[in-house]
Length: 224
Image 1: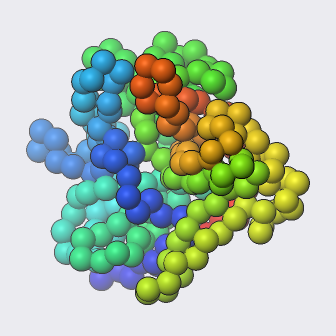
Image 2: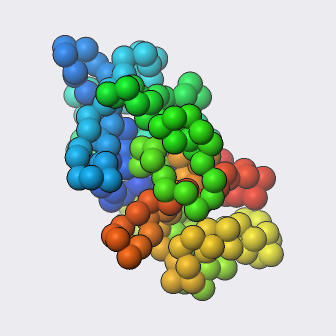
Image 3: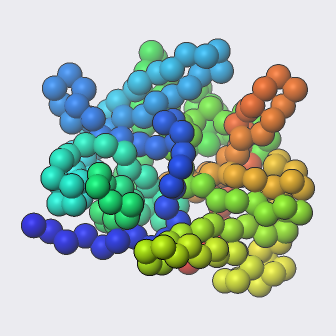
């Protein structure tokens, strides 16, 4: 039985159903799936069977750790596949996967690429129409720094700020890009495997997800 490395970087611990990928049986075949919430209140369940290697990577972890295949996984901005497993609070590194995941549903292409349904590139400030699967980060109050939290060992939680790994000035420049959409109060935003940044924002007509821009890994946390 394979031994998989416990992932000690940023792991999504509590996210909604539409903020993750999953491997599930659909029409008798294991497929990569998402839950997609539409603007008009519908919930879509697109799936794709063109990523057998990714399915195998996820299931290998699930079976090795918990004895059962299928379930949620995440892909971060470094293309690392991060897999939680039943029976443990740990997340495991399944490997890296850089093939773009796209879903076709009712004539629309749904992807984490920063594009609309017609394939036009999004501009910062546009409504985010892609999947909400991504890795959560926090813009700190005041909007001058970014952080995430992880568990380096049992019963310990560590807070990591961007200003602790790059200069305060560089961290502030990145944070100010997020602040332009989130505001000075800060809060959660997401980065996906396409390095697209998007965030939930309260608007007059309700909660909307807004595209912020593209992440530059040269001004970011190191790969774990």
